[in-house]
Every structure is written in structure tokens, then in C-alpha cells.
Image (tube, rainbow, N blue to C red; front, side):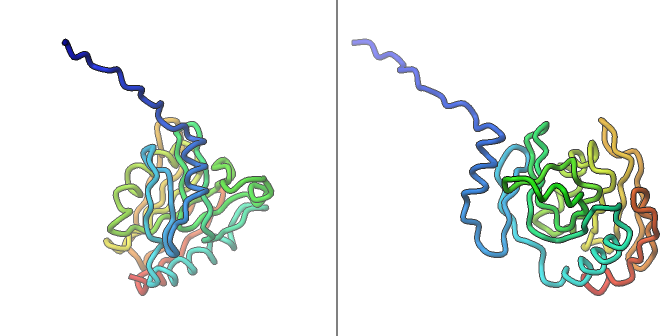
Length: 194
């Protein structure tokens, strides 16, 4: 008798919508968030307690200079980027308030005017590579608060090839945040959070 390979049925990879639905149905432990990074569901911890003060300082300054109708917040929402099958929950965001009047659990990333990520050992690579690439095509301003290096970098002027402008300062020095904000961000309060 000759053995023959039995063809195995292969399942198609899950769609972006399938992955979003799975994230919604997940019972993520308190203190953790689930995002779609590199086409996979990634669960990582929310920021450490010591990040609260610099996040609050940043949120207050951004809120005072946000475009009309936009809100600055640290609420745990996912913003979807369907063109690249990604959904991120930035530590801090500024977005058009109208985005939160939609049905569903994931806001449209087109509503974002700014995102800020606070680096940690577990998220650093995604913040500096994956998210930089995705945000750089759509989001007007991206701030990377690099807690490990005590620096903040502002990326702006998105294009199909990524951000065209970058400025980095050490904590304690002012950072120019371009339009649609147009102000000098005071970073003195960031160092105490590290």
C-alpha cells in the first residue's frame, strides 16, 4: 500500500476586522492594553505609575494649545489604521472630539492631531520603528518621550514616506511643537517622572 500525503486545509489569515473583534472580546488583565502591531495582537502593560506626572504635564500643555474641537487625553482607546491593518492605543493623544460620537470601540485614526508615546523596555522598539512609520503617514505630530534617554522627540510634517521633520531636546529644555499646536512645550516636569 502506498501512503499519500493528505492535503490539509489551510485557514486564511485573519482579516483586520477579525483581529479588531478579537481585541474587543479579550479579557485583558487590569493594567494591560492590547494593540495590533505588525499584524499581530500584542498585549503590553500601561505606563508605570512614575510616568503619570510627565503625562499629566504634557496633557495639560497640549490641551491648552489643541486645535479647536480637539481634546487631549490619556484614556485607553484604540485608534484604527485600516490601510495598514494596525490599531494603537497611544499613551496620550489629541483628537477631534467628534471621533468619539461614532458607534464602536475603536476610533478613526484620521481624527488624531497628535500622539505621544512614553518609551519603556517592552514598547521602545515599536514606538521608535513600527509606530513611527505608521503615524508618519497620517498623524500631524508624534512625540516620543524617551524616558530611558531623558529626551523628547517631536516628529511632524507627515507624508506617504513618513515624517519630514524631527527635533529632539533633553528633558528640561523647551521643545517647539509645530502647527496645528504652535507653541514651545516646557519639559522641565518630565525629568522627575523618570
